[in-house]
Image 1 (cartoon, helix red, strand yellow):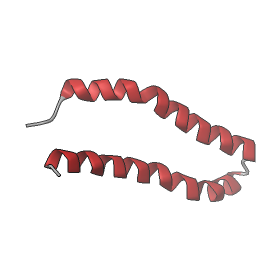
Image 2 (cartoon, rainbow, N blue to C red):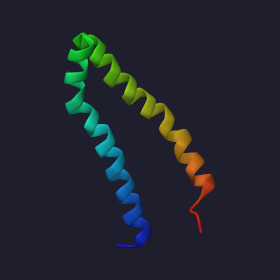
Image 3 (cartoon, rainbow, N blue to C red):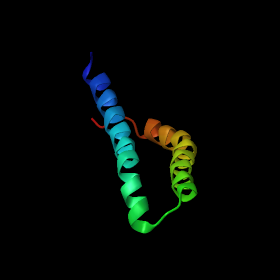
Length: 69
């Protein structure tokens, strides 16, 4: 596996861990803030929609920047 592939896989791992950390912590935050189940669902959905909308733009932006040398 090349160094570039390792960097890409590491970046994906960090991104998914960051998203995955929200899921187990959200119930305690919701309880502390007295949020309803629907509100928590809206929060999860808004996070997914934001990622869906931002991914094409950030992907093309990163492609134009290229790798630092």
